[in-house]
Image (cartoon, rainbow, N blue to C red; front, side, top):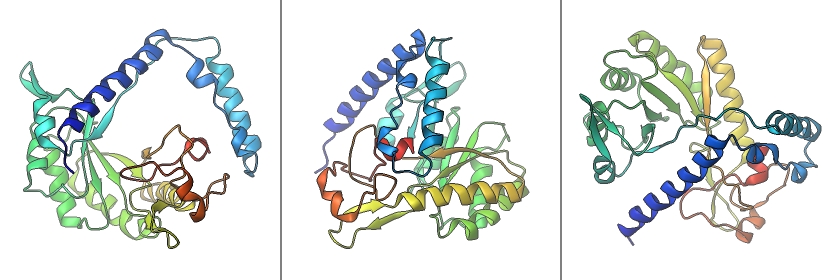
Amino acid sequence: KWDPERLLQGYFHSAATLNFLRGFAANADPKALSAIDVSSLKSSPEFSSLEGGAREIGAKYAGGGAPTDFYTAHEAMQLDLEEALTRKVGDKYYNLSAHLVWIGDRTRQIKGAHVEYFRGISNPIGVKVGPSMTVPDLKELVQVLNPKKEEGRLMIITRYGASKIEEMLPAHIEAVKETGVPVVWQCDAVHGNGIVAKSNNYKTRRMEDIVAEVLKCVEVHKRCGTVLAGVHLEVTGQDVTECLGGSVGLTEEMLTKNYETFCDPRLNYAQSIE
């Protein structure tokens, strides 16, 4: 059932989380970074490397340091909410609910309301690009969203799935190059890899597919002379059972143990650290 009150609840929890993060950032509090626990990954063939990395990070931040900058982003899906959080600053309009907002793969129609809204704000913006994106549409879209060809204005977040990325990404990279529009490339390695578990019909993802898409994305960008600047994942610090695989060996039968998401399956703490 649709409940607008949940938008207000989401706003409250977002504000509380931001204030919590700002406390860490302002005080250069090292505890969050120096306490990475990899003990649940002992069965991983990469355990010694993971343990060494966690130890190195812990040592680096154990003595504190300078205040840390951090930035937030979210999909601007509900335009009524996003418009209410948009303000004029100087002679430009900004969505003040996040540093960066992005358009989803299902709402990126060139003549649609989301693209029109994004054209009018001065935030850095992103757009999801999946298998249904045609080369002509991508060329037009990047020019509409970044007509002044500003560096850092537009991020393209690809989300093809591990089985389709090698087929789709090279043509999309070439299409963007031909427009001359500068973009930042990011890999969404989760949304194209959704499956339904045969044994219980739970929506899930395989960690091996997520890792495979990231690695393939790195290789394609290397061949095409472009740079993969980031990875987009859905994770939680909780011990949920929503995604399959990883060193924790999560199987379909284990999904029912602690499946808490109301939307998309997330990598749990151990899978995220791995």
